Amino acid sequence: MDEPVKKFLKELTPYPPGKPIEELEREYGVKNSIKLASNENPLGPSPKAIKAIKESLNKINRYPDSKGYYLKNRLAEKFGLPMADIILGNGSDEIIKLATHAFVSPGDEVIIPFPTFLMYEKNAQSFQGKIIKIPLKDFYIDLSSILNAISEKTKIVFLNNPNNPTGTALGINEISYFLQSIPKEVIIVLDEAYIEFATEKNIESTIHLLESCPNLIILRTFSKLYGLAGLRIGYGFASKDIINVLTLLQQPFSTNYIAQVGAIAALNDNKFVKKTLALITEGLKFIYSQLNTMGLQYINTQTNFLMIKTPISSKETHERMLKEGVIIRSMEDFGIKDFIRINIGLPEENERFIRTLKKIL
Image (cartoon, rainbow, N blue to C red):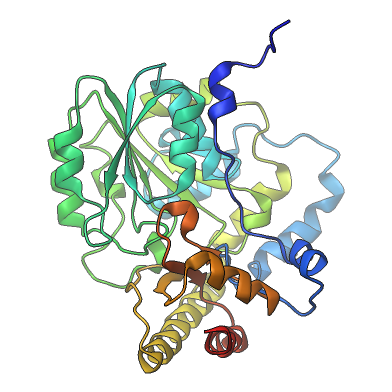
């Protein structure tokens, strides 16, 4: 008897997550490891979020608000949007899946830059979309080539700005022109997971373009800036019509009660946000100066992470660093064999990374 599993599922490539510290220490027999592989907030969670979560623990016997009214209301206030234009997700990953489910049928084309966040490709594969990869140009997303690749079969274009893993970002004028040039029947999913870290003046969110771009979906997350990666809470902006379609496909209670409570409190923690951004700015200055001294090439970033070119393969660098208790990300899974990626950590973690990198090279 043939296996009941759909044939195309056997061809899917699992997403390669960063190693948890506990797993690394068991596998390599090391202690006191540091993790710089998953672009997490090195300061931990927002203190206001922790306080709010602790005060709410006696209510977890109840189901959460499936509509996320209070969190949506707070997001609407912060971004000046109607609540009807907001969707919450179990991480922004869920919204990526919902969008692909809603708009991609077997054989439809999905355009993605390459390399970029791997979940775009994985979700397109899951719904049997035909993936069109457009190579980056000098580590930047090549909008003109993406525009030229759009056909009658194109249903979704995924953009990550700033882009993961490169850390490069496109200016608002470039993106605005691109959005105006796209056929209205093509959905643009614009992932702004790292937009709060961007420092160049011409790099900004596209929220103000939503009204003129009814085919635009913007993704955001609480995982990076607010330090709530473990709660899996993300959100998105789009027209009311698109939000209604995505909501129809969403499981009830997909964002849990604790995540909603923590996210509301985190949005009010301006002190923590400022502290995080200052830490990243100072950490990048230190890492840049050390890499310049070492003569190593790197990609200037608009995020809390950066890519570094190493004289040995990224896989070998990754393995050597792991044995020293420093968890980084090899870019081999992204098709870049001579680069590693690290996120900025605490000052002592940044110093240990540089010290270890010098040792293993």
